[in-house]
Length: 202
Image (cartoon, rainbow, N blue to C red):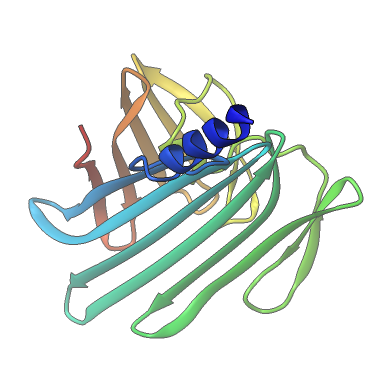
């Protein structure tokens, strides 16, 4: 009669541990966004592990003042099952106008991809890593990564010690730097110039 009571008490204690759930583990990271030396926004990413399922989310809010001020709000939600992407939803608003609304769903051994114009295409490659999941795991050299923005696989190249880059389909390059397996910074070449995401996590 004592074992069920003890088990209940253990579950209650686990449920109240910070950053953890009974079913899994939750992590949240914050990055400051810079254009040159000026901070222009923030980016938050999270990882929730529940048994065989892992959910990654991203939210960012960036304001860039050129001749015209641009407010860019972006969200991504990727769901993995047993290490493979199950679904992805990516939206981006520029000055409150929807510019990206990309979805990917794993159906019958392939991915159905739909973009903001409701165009449909299919991807047969197995997706084990996405641009969003890179924030939580250092990749392997020459690994193929799914880009939620471009809805295609892109090749990741190792540039140095714990440093990797991706040449994007639009000609831009994004560089990822890690220390002890943890993301330290992301540097992207964009139409707004060089944008850098710097970790504020220990």
